[in-house]
Image (tube, rainbow, N blue to C red; front, side, top):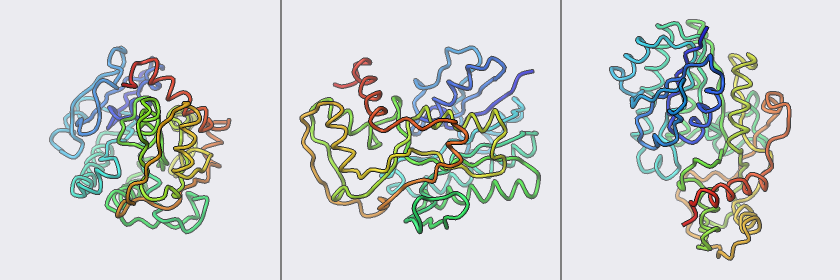
Length: 314
């Protein structure tokens, strides 16, 4: 018996990798829905017999409802969202429209018999952290910017639908995830490609802000372990990397791994949205992976090798 699975935002970096691994199971029938605002159809593995792509906007009820009623999904991975710090700061109304998409998706999931919804939330819900590491159950949320507030609202919607209608969910709070299909809107692809070209690497502010970085395979493997093993149902899981590093140290590590002669250039700090520190409590994620996450140096090496072998340096 097949499982019919919807992946919204499936033309994005993380969700397309998720689709590819879901498709390894022949019993999964996967429909990817994406409005291609930031996604790319080239990322969707439509050459696989159990993957289908539909250009569709989850924020438009008339557009997305036909897909639900015609397909009868068992599971939904909701990864569609406006992403990228600069983009979300420049277009806050685009971000707020994503609330409509959450409402549409949950109404349709409840009305068509979806068994469980997986939601791609974000470390941004923590805002400036009250404690480090950030824990899913004890760290207070401090959302201020539209992107973070919308993700927080989405989490509240999921918990409310579970209480009201019994719709199961798992919330994945994603910390910085990187991988071969990510655009240069994001820091690690930008740093690595600049380093491979021996071009200047630009850093906002003094680079003292810290982050952890999660290789995309770790992200997908942990999320699918929760799906296939029914772990952390009606719960929240941090998905991130283990190595906390400042942005300046990250740039220096990229130079060292790639052997680059690039110069580090400091730009003025972003006016908002660049939180000072991010480090997740990975207790739950480690239980799902049953191994340590990929180290940052190894992940950078993989990313650089991908760019070289695919001719993506120039």
